Amino acid sequence: MCFAALEKHWLSDRISGIVPDMEKKIIKKLQQAVGKANLLTSLEECSCYSYDASGQNFMPDAVALPESTAQVAALLRLADEYRFPVIPRGAGSGTTGGSLPVHGGLVIGFSRMHRILEIDPENMIAVVEPGVVTGELQAAVKKHGLMYPPDPASLKFCSIGGNAAECAGGPSAVKYGVTRDYIIGLEVVLPNGEIMRTGVRTEKGVVGYDLTRLFIGSEGTLAIFTKLILRLLPLAEAKATFLLSFSSLAQATGLVAKSLTAGLMPCTLEYMDRTAVQVVRDRLSNSLPEETAALLLVEFDGSKAEVEQQGKLFAEFVQQEDCVVRRAESEEETQELWLARRSIAPACLSLRPHKISEDVVVPRSRIPELVRFVEQLTQELELIILTFGHAGDGNIHVNIMVDKQNEQEYGKGLKAKERLFERVLSMGGTLSGEHGVGITKSPFLSQELDETALSVMRRLKGLFDPHNILNPGKIFPV
Image 1 (cartoon, helix red, strand yellow):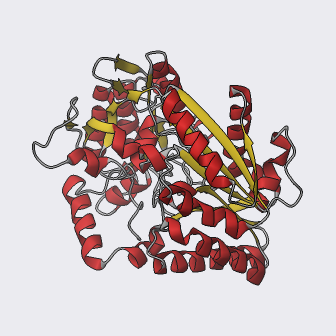
Image 2 (spheres, helix red, strand yellow):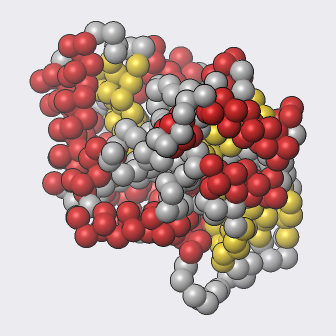
């Protein structure tokens, strides 16, 4: 067992025989910081932290499982002293490799820092540790008549800290926004072990630079979250869910912008193409028309009066469209529809053993153009590519299905990714709406950001982390 960065640092000016002794010394100090039982060093234990949903593997040298801010700070002071990499990790549900130890080093897992520290119903805030599971927080605040709106598809197991690091979104973003809109304050540990608090517990606060927003979405490269102050909203009184089946893909995607400009305000507006529908068809008890080329899942929430009005306006609006409309008649039926939608990502692996998962965003009015382009790629490159996702805000997930053991097919998949990115940027879009950059998108960063912006970002990284300790190799191309 050896710390890759430490070995390079020490071997540059010392004899190799010293390195094992230094490793033992560091291991002992790490054990003192978190407790011997909470420092994992065996191959079997560390392998559990070597992968995420991107499908890539990088073995850490050790894994620490702290239970307090003080322990996190102690770990980072050691990293600053001995110059080894530290990689913060939530539930490992990310798809861009953001939590992978690409240069070895110490992974810090937050499964023991999973407490909801406070729910304040009067001021509608919650204070949580980073390991809190998103769905469990939603269930907890619901008991107080409140809601935490961000709802990524992996909400049953993803963590708030990971959501904050990637600025996760989800289906409700079209109405409620994304994770950064609900984090109003943070406690973080900097790479040198210093503890800092940012933000407020109030609705307003403009004292100093907005460091809270800077850290959200920074993918663990600037600081490590140890507490998060979250803004909550009153729980919606009522909800209405509609499923629309279309025989025309263009008609389904074209309806997205039309519905929003018609004065309708759904809390979710989700899209699924034919292939996406096929992989989850068995999860729907009511059969769909055989000619179904696309589905829209549309939901309204609010007061009973608001939902009734919006539901009525929507029913009148879609009468003009050539589609089959189904309204969920019970909470069970609503949950069934959502289960099918949230199952697409894992279910599509029945088509091919691997996927290149992208989460591009384009202006809503250009979704039909994007989907047509993907259809062309599918035919031209002879690949299986499915599109689905958060059409209400233009965030379309494009899953390119491949078998990595088939070099020709995998090569075509990578080519499809490159061409997809080129087209998205030419349409005024962005390469990621919620998955982040990590390592899978970093080679393409300069296509979206100009050199001045990249230079400023690198300087910010250097200011917070001069020794490149936190999550090295992420975001910026190496």
